[in-house]
Amino acid sequence: MKIHILGVPMDLGAGRRGVDMGPSAIRIAGLREKLTALGHDVSDEGDITIKAPEQLRIRDQKLKYLPEIVRACTILSHKVSKILAQGGFPLVLGGDHSVAMGTIAGVSAYAREHSQSLGVLWIDAHGDMNTHKTSPSGNIHGMPLAASIGLGAVELRSVGGDFRKADPRLVALVGVRDLDGEERKAMRHQGIHVFTMEEIDKDGMGTVIRRALRKLKGVDLLHVSLDLDAVDPSVAPGVGTPVKGGLNYRESHLLMESIADSGAMTSLEVVEVNPILDKRNQSAEFAVELVQSSFGKKIY
Image (spheres, rainbow, N blue to C red):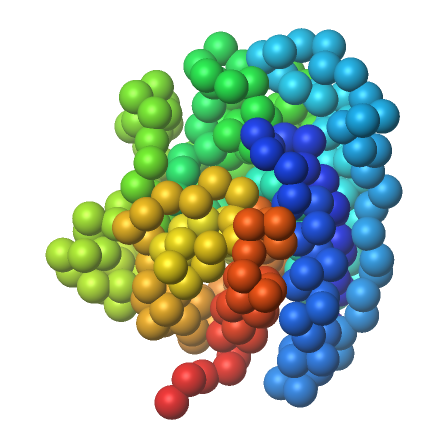
C-alpha cells in the first residue's frame, strides 16, 4: 500500500494546549519506519502550517478560532483528495479532532467525483456532535462529526465544498461513553449507529466491531477516525480529553486488527495525542501500535 502521512499540528479546536505536538510525537515513536517494516511504501508529506493561538484572536466565543480552523481543514481536504486520486492512502496525524472535517471533506469530494459511497467509522469517547448552538464551550473539536453530516455552522459544513460530506446512516461510532443530551438526540434523529462502552463490556469487542462493520458493509470508501481518547487513560494517558472506562490494550488492538481484516479501510486519521499530558511518549507509541494493527500487524 502507498501510504501518505499528513500532519495537522493544530490545537485551536481544543480546550487545552498540547495536541498540536501530536504529529511530531507519533513520528518520533517510529510511525514511518514501522509501517515500512510491514511492507508498505510510506512517504511523509510534512505538516500543514497552522497559526498558534497567540497569533490569533477569538472572534466568536461559540466558534473559537473559526477562520484558521476552516483554512487548515480546507487545505487538508484538497491534499487528501489528491492522494486518493493518485491511488494513495491518506494517513492524517492530528492535532485536535476538528481536523476530521478536512479529512472527511477530502475523501467525500473524491467519492462524489467518482460516484462512490463513503462510510465513516468514528472511534471516540465522545460523539463530537455538538454545534455552535449546543456546545457548552465553543471548542470546535466537539463539532466535526456534526459538521460532516451537514449540521451546525455553515462555515464548518462547507469545508471542502458546499455539500453534505457523510450520510449519517453510513456512520458508526465505537467506544462512546461521554455524550451530551443534545448529542444523543441528534444521533437518534439522524440515524447514526452508536456502539457504546456498555455494549463492548456486555458483548465483547469482537462482536461489537463486527456489528459496526456490518452497518457499513458495501461502501466504496471507508474512513476511520481514531481519537486516542477512546482508549482508557491507564493505557493512553496523554490525550486531549481523557475519560475513564475506555478501551483496554487488547480491545484496542482487536478493534484495529478487525478493521484490517475487513480490507475496507481507505483512509485513516489519528488525533488528540497530547505529549504534555503523556508519560515518556507512551500514548504516541501506543497510537503507532494501533496504526500498525490497522495495516495488518498481528499480536500473537
